[in-house]
Image (cartoon, rainbow, N blue to C red; front, side, top):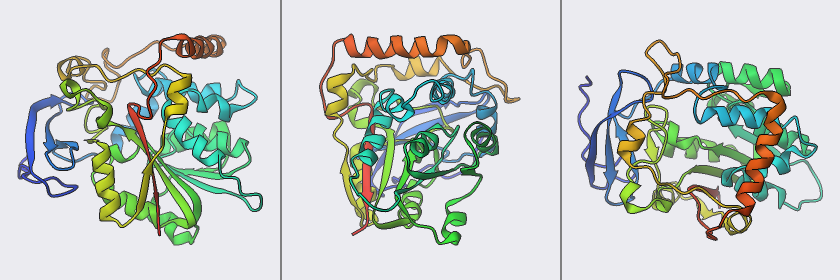
Length: 332
């Protein structure tokens, strides 16, 4: 049990909060969290609002069989199977479409485009950008993930913090926070520090699960279990952070993606999500709830092509909004 004071105001905006759900089981066996919701900026967050880096070492040690992370492991392998890995990744999910399309449309004719991916994980996004000619590098807190990325893709990754990068004096045209801000205890400070590494006219591209696209009956939590995910952001939450930090902001219009592909919407009740937990046992091994079978290498490409055709042929709900939001932050 924890002895921390129960929150009465939102950590993002100081608005009034309400505890909506008690004792939601954690990602790891033996943990539980309460879920609060802010009435002002609409964000959902967990209590206690705490995490540790060790859980990610367990996750990346089992990324090939762990629900959710298995698909990242699969994407990493598939980038080696296609002659245009950037186009392949762009077509997998709305988050990659949003980020990669925003970078590709940069039409500058001279000079290198520099990119830093914060939370680069298994490394394949940084790799596909380098393969396409961009000067991209990645950092992550997980030494296991960084070691994997270096082994597969090359020496473009480091176990480093934003402070470490700041000390080098480097500045970047694009900084990527792809599905990262929901993992940290203080997302406002993360965005502030990341935006401080932007070059003149640079852009900070942030993706995260989008609470604003969830139906009211499932909108409390449609995110990974705590303490892996600590927040479920609405678009209003992201607007608030931008205004608080005096950053320009906009949201990527994903209509081009939803015209092309069918998108799976949020639909699971919180009780249904609860029944899939825990994902990890106390000793760090994968629980039966969290384990999926490994797809043999020779079937990977066929599986992706089948999924691609299915998304193209299924009925589409054309919208500029998907269950993933991509926000663009910039400095005046």
